[in-house]
Structures are given as C-alpha cells and as structure tokens.
Length: 131
Image: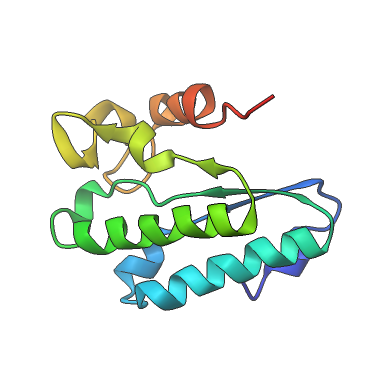
C-alpha cells in the first residue's frame, strides 16, 4: 500500500493480489483485507481499471496457513463484489484437486510461487474476463 502511487505511474490497469507474505508475517486477516480494499479504491479513484486476485495456495505453509488463506480469500471475494471489480481466482486455478490447499508440484517452482507452467495456467484460466 505504501508503494502503490509510485508503482502505478503510466499504467491503465491495476491488478491487486492478496499475498502470502501477509499470512506468513502474521498480519491479521482483517488488516490485510482492509489494505487490499484501500488499494482497490485508490486505483478506482485514479480512474484505472482494477482487478483483484486472491491468495495462491501455499505448499510450504500448508497446513498451518490454510485456514487464514481461506479466510483472507473469502474477504477478497467480498471486496471484489462490494467494490464492483473482477475477481481473478488465482487460488482455485492453481489448487491441486487431489491435494486441497496446495499447488500441483508442476505448477510451483518452490512451494511458494508459481512455476512457468503455473503462470501459464493463470494466464489461460484466471485472466479470462467478461466481454
């Protein structure tokens, strides 16, 4: 949030993504969600197209962080509805159906971040926006 205005110079679209870092650093879900809401509102205030992405599954934080990730993602979905911005379903797009709460091994490079295959999947599935 503190760097937002510096990062959006010259852009037309802002993608705000919920982050594992907030969960890993013990930031309360309510605080993290409010920060995301403020970034969405700031982008709209500046006339940008705004998209909101939820938190990815976190293999290295599973199972300890699973509950908080799901709580934050529920808040992110509510923010998207309330603020009238599209929700990019990053979590569900990369969640392994056979291992809930985690990415498939080929969709992550290190258990924290998507691999090239994971990013391709996000691009193909999560970024499908309504016409």
